[in-house]
Length: 154
Image 1 (cartoon, rainbow, N blue to C red):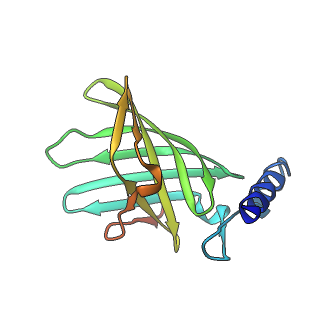
Image 2: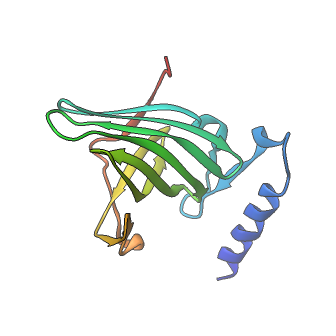
């Protein structure tokens, strides 16, 4: 409990540093005594599974995450939208707002950060109006066989 409070206070202190210090802000991890360099996370990522692709572009400022995510599925419905969220420990947690088949939807999204790659989280989903959320966020599985790998944004 004290360790969790310590890390929370450190994150608040780092976030309060304000503009101009973004290059020095790091999210603290609890499992590994390492830190995640947020500057290295900004950029573009690609996931390819067969003929399906997903492209993710992230912009990270302190502990805040914004970006664009597109799923292009072969012979299935694709979707494109924005991500907004935050980095906590070695996880990106946020909401994906997208359009698919002319309908607007919102889905909770999580990524685990490992070795300059992102592993997307999956689990049981609940639904409230147009928003899908993880029923059991602590029980998520992360797709290790198909990570998002960092690529050039060109």
